Image 1 (spheres, rainbow, N blue to C red):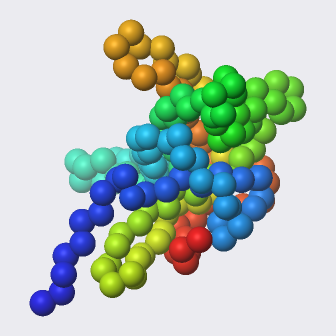
Image 2: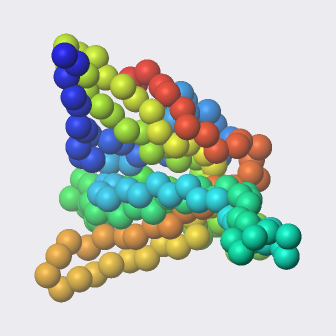
Length: 167
């Protein structure tokens, strides 16, 4: 009987890089990431008409890919500088043409250990714009940032589910 594998979220990884890069070249892991959510939706269109016998006739439309994640504020070198990944995400939000966001490649890679040193890697990848960068300073918890990103075709990459080998 085959072994059932139930992976934990702690084993997943979030990678980032220059917009336009392919997933195999994304070597920068966003270690400050805590909770990552990948959402893919399709718009819907109402094609109902009088000829349809009392039911709504829904048709699928364009797809949208979003990633939201929290980044724990991590200071490095005890000199008050933040984690490089946080700086890159913030810069992608703050810079860009006409005050807009600069694109960034993101790859939310899941990891499922299959035992005996084998693992399955795969996840959603694409170029994104950062739509929201929120600093959280709760009284009784760790300071963090909440990030909302949405896929863009600005750099020529179409979002996709990809399987990659371990880095």
